[in-house]
Structure formats: C-alpha cells, structure tokens
Amino acid sequence: MNRTMLAALDPAPKRELTPAEQFRQEQLLSSILADAAPVKSLKRRRPVRRIAIAGALVVGAAAAVIVAPVAYHMIRGNPGVLSAAAIGSWTGMAVRVTADSGAQQWCEQRATGDPNATGPFTVSNADLRGEVTSMILTRGWTTRCAWSGPTRPA
Amino acid sequence: MAIETDAEFSAMYRAHYADVLAFARRRTVQADDVVGETFLAAWRRRRDLPPDPRPWLFRTARNLMLNVDRSARRQRAVAVRVAEQDQGDGYEPMLTAEARMDLVKAWRSLSTQDQELLALHAWEGLSDKEAATVLGCTRAAFSMRLSRAKRRLAKHVGPVSDLPIAFANLNGAS
Picture (cartoon, rainbow over the protein chains, first blue to last red):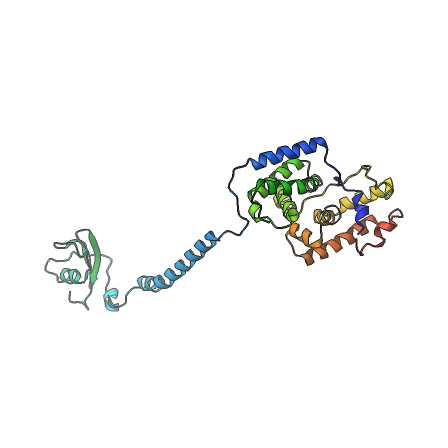
C-alpha cells in the first residue's frame, strides 16, 4: 500500500499546532501536573481474587471428599440398628410404652448426650410400634432420638 | 522509561502531544477529552511507561474511545474518519476529485478493523511492531491482517485509471 495515496485522505495531517492548540496543550499539562493522585503501577497486580476462588474451591473439594462418605452413611442409615424383622413388625398405630419397659434404660445407655449436662433424661414422645420402641431423650440442652428393637436388650 | 520528575514528563508530553491529538482527531470529534484522559493516565503511570511511549499512548487513547459507551465496548476497533475534501496539504496532484471520491467510497466499504489497520500503517506511521502493540496483537498477526486489509481496499477501489501509481506496488514496501 502506498502511504502517500492514503495520506491524501488523512483527516488530521501532520502540521504545526495553532496558537489555540498550543494554549490548550499547556493548560492541559498544568492541570495534569497538578494531579495529586497516587502513581499507579502498570505491573500486573497479584491475582488475589483468583487465589481466593481457587483456595475456596480446593477447600470445598476437600470438604466434599471428607463429608461425602459420612453423608452417604447417614442417608443410607446404619443397618445394624434395627433388624429386618423389627422393621417388618412396624405398625401404623403406636402403643404407649409401659413404665417397666427396659427400652428406656437401653436408649439412655446408647444416647450420647452433652458431657456437661447433668441429671436424668426427660423422655418424650415414647411409643411402641410392633417390636420397635422409639423415644426422644432430653438432658440439659441435649436432645437425642433413640430407638430399640427385639435384638436389643429392651 | 521511569519518569520521576515533572520536567521529564513535560518533555515526553510535548514530544507526543501532537501525535496523540492527531490520532484522536482521526477517530473522534471529542479529541481533546481523549488526549487529556490519555496523558492523565500516563502521568499516573509515569514510572512504568515503556521507553518509547508512543504506542502505549495510542493504545490508551484507543481503549478510552472504545470504552466511551457500552455499545462501543463490544466493538473490537475504532472507526477511523476520512477527509472527504482536499485539505490543501500538497497531495492534490496525487488524486483527482474523482479518484478521491472512489477512494473515500472504498475506505467506507472497509470494516472498522481494516480501517484501523490501514490508519495505523499509513497515518500514524507506526512500524508493524508498534502497531501490534497498539492493537494488542502479535507483529505477525498485524502484518497478516494489514496485507489482507490492503487487498480488500484495492479490490474496493477497482481499476481506477487515476490511481495506477498508488496501487502498482500494492504488496510491495510502502
């Protein structure tokens, strides 16, 4: 491409500045030099945000690896708690648990409460369905849900 | 080119003010605002300016024009204006009125990307490396795009008898 040809179309060809332009030039320079803003650096800033996001992802992934098996077992349940026969005996109607039942004693032994809590358990919502006894045990600020079946020393 | 003193910055400013002003005038009617913002950015980053600040200044001015509004931000190039009338700068013998009209028409048929490439080459007079810095691409990419832009301009101009010299060495050294 011939530069000379295109130069004919140049809307701002090279020339000396007019007095008005020179005046504006000096005015602008004065205002720029008066600018007191701190000097910025062209050097690339440290990618703090990227590092933070990457760190959060790593922590999240690690937490998922740790929590996933626990959550899986929680969702799946512990098949050792109740036998298939106990679950099979489950009834729609609940029967009141008698006071001499050994189920409460068993549940209290298994329930892990607040180590700082003192005093006996308070039992609520205790019922018997088939061979399964379930109850809510409260001691201090700690509440546990427990159940027992025929395979347990109820 | 770490500028530490007001005097150093003033010298750099006076050396490049006219070039940056012309660069902006070729692309916007608000050239004074663009020039002011450009040199203010240079002042605030004066300690990290490259040894030859001209491409950096052009690049900053270009980015400012691209960021004028949201719609322009989606564009990849700044449209370049063209002088429709002869400005009495000694080039009149080179082009007749008819040839100029054809050339203006051909210029306007180009994409803004092509216009920008050609303007950096022909008007700003930048080397391929400097122009690549302005556009943020490699020198090889700029050279390739410039060659294509030249071919497209020549194609749009067509066989104009008044421009034999201009296009005779289209792909040769400029």
